Length: 178
Image 1 (cartoon, rainbow, N blue to C red):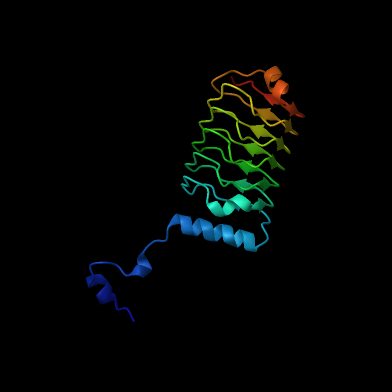
Image 2: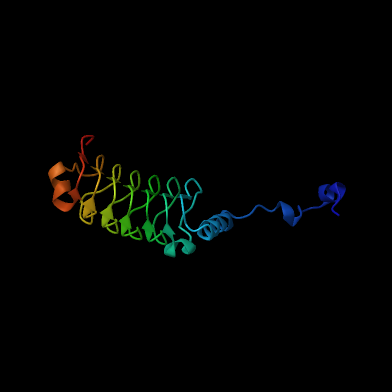
């Protein structure tokens, strides 16, 4: 039995007070998600992640996947398929390499440091938003966007014609805030 007096007089706290690393918590969260059948949303946002855990790369997410508001510079190890939304906005991404090839819902990569859409999904079930980046080209944009395509506030002021030339967009094109 640990006595309070012993704890107070020791130079170091006992190991029960050592905080767990965030990586361990994230990996446990993902393992639990997989054990539960990979159904529903997987939320890894606001965890100060700099990389996505290796365990994710073979996971199919049965809902939405959130990894926004971190410090990611890459989507390496991202899930290969997401049936819902894929949100990776508010990171430090410069490329979309590692993204799923297809997303059932919307794909949001706004507010990053993207200079290229290389690695973007080929097909997006709803909206695609790459606004507030440093894009100079729409090369590598999704071939099919079944919702809206937003690309305002980039290094180049894209036109609707430029967007529709590279992507089959079923909905509207958002370029009005340039």
